[in-house]
Image 1: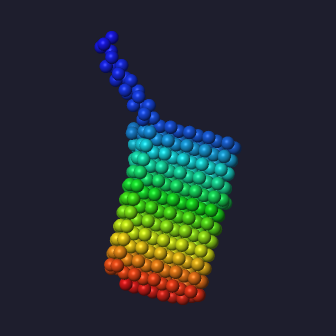
Image 2: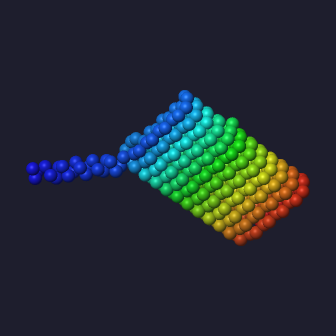
Image 3: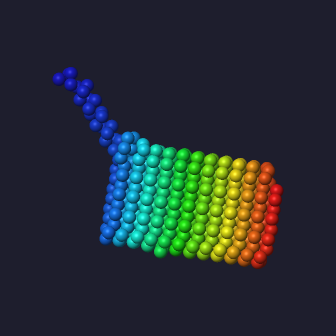
Length: 296
């Protein structure tokens, strides 16, 4: 009997390790014509949790964790009809993806590839159609958050080769469009907040360290563009209240600079470009059809 004790211990250890490395998948559906697909399989795909829940009719959910993804979680919740959620987490660890859709015709796509300790969240309320897409590739400790309430909204967040960076998009109204791109960033933040209709905001942060970009839009048909390229510790803020205002802030090869543009009215246009170190620019436009340019 003593001969078999080491063998029995080895078998027990292997069994316990298998249990500890197990994945957990939960699906719940109530309604008509719903579809769910959950895949957590493959070498190194361990200790993951996926929960899919659908209440309503003709909803569709896909969730995949593969290529060695471990210690990660996916949560998908849909209430209503014609909602669609597609989440993929691959080749990373310690990630969380959450999508909640309430309404009709919402679409949420989330991809986290070779991410570690990152979070992606999409909340969409209403309809008939909200669309959100989050992509996080080759990064550590990044956060991406999208919340949309209204109709025909569209949001995109792309974080590539980023570390400790955050991106937030909030859209409340109809027809708003927002895009946040963070490429090779460290501790960089992007915030886009839109209230109204048909507003558009785009943030491009490339090779940025400790820089912040803010676009706050209240009204209709406003356009905000912020570009931070080879940026170190810069801050850019666009505040627009009114209609058809356009503001662009460029910070290129910039260190410790600050730029803010505030527009009250309709049809105002302003561009600020900073190339250098510790520059400060503030632009205020009140009224209609004003044009301003600052270059530093």
